[in-house]
Length: 122
Image 1: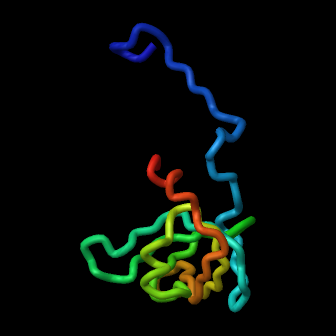
Image 2 (image 1 turned 45 degrees about the vertical axis):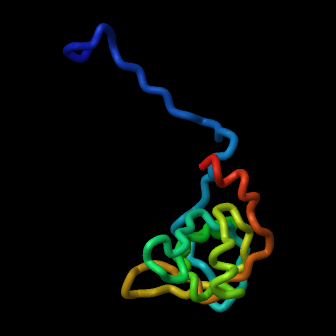
Image 3 (image 1 turned 60 degrees about the vertical axis):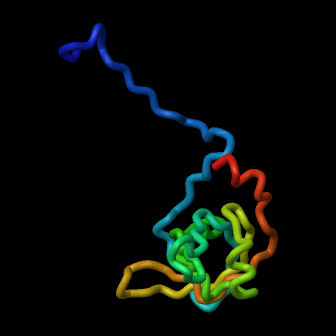
């Protein structure tokens, strides 16, 4: 028993995925370059206070690391960037940026916009 605690500690590990949790995927798998891939927006910041086109991250379907996305590569320009929401389904192309040691999207198009009412609760 650790000092100051009334009894021994026990540790439990989750073995199943809770609803809404992201599935486990191989984040170290390389992404094919110059190939259109499906994914979902997992983080998005539309230039709040910066006046820029926004930036965020895309989770590829299947395997692969999260991909950085700058608003300037989003088809539809500033209007699309302003309307983009977490959970939106996208098609994207990515290239590896060796200076930053990460993938960055070179083109992104929205396939299906996320339900904004769901994002209000996140």
